Image 1 (tube, rainbow, N blue to C red):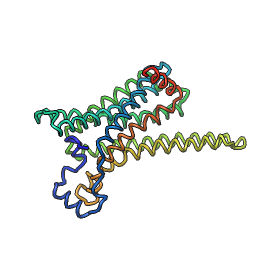
Image 2: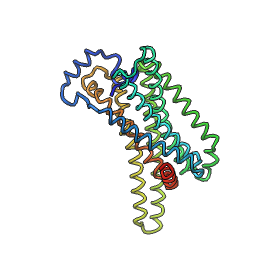
Image 3: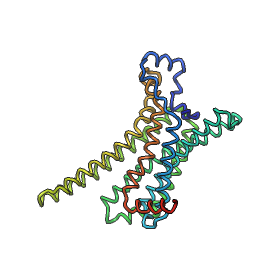
Length: 314
């Protein structure tokens, strides 16, 4: 899959010449340095699946008044962000295919402008998706540790301010990124943002799981441990593993790719890693497919509304 201008520079370091990269690749030769030839159809299929899934989540939340709460609004915003990831991916692919096959003929200046617009949409959706994953983690933390004060802490007004702030920050940061995409400082800021979100989710979810285990331990110390208690503890561990595992697996390779661009742009082994850039993009799109399964479809109320939405649409 072809990528547009700034994203192409995320694929390959700007300070590594073409000759250096080819020599490095030959020096580290081996089949694994050739990367993966991922067909455009796979990008298209995953993008469409993600788009449909997240569109259903948004429709269900808007339809059911029982889901009009800060928690589901945050999930709705995550779904919108994931939809934008899918839409921007589909728009980029279609735009490049039309240009390559001569169906769409544009002046170079217009093509560059379209490049910037699509890349801003991609970057904004990625940053907002990461941000709302962190916001949902914080919201769940407040729900568990400040249950009695939750509605006074997370008011609708504060939720709206939080959502507006995330969208505004995502738009501004994506504009800065696209404008200064050659700067390592910008890449370091993006890497730092990812690491912050990873640590934030790790700390919050582990603390929540530790509290759940403490409650189970307190109950089991007063009475004989039951299978249900052990099952609940195991379920919590599995959920925590899924949440953090999916986040790290889907986003980690892309940001590790950015780290290598900053730290070892001409190293032979780093150059080989760069050749798998399309795989890292596929993982990000897969995250947009998986997010509704983790954060939305596990809600019985939302699943019931989804069935109503699908039934009405049919």
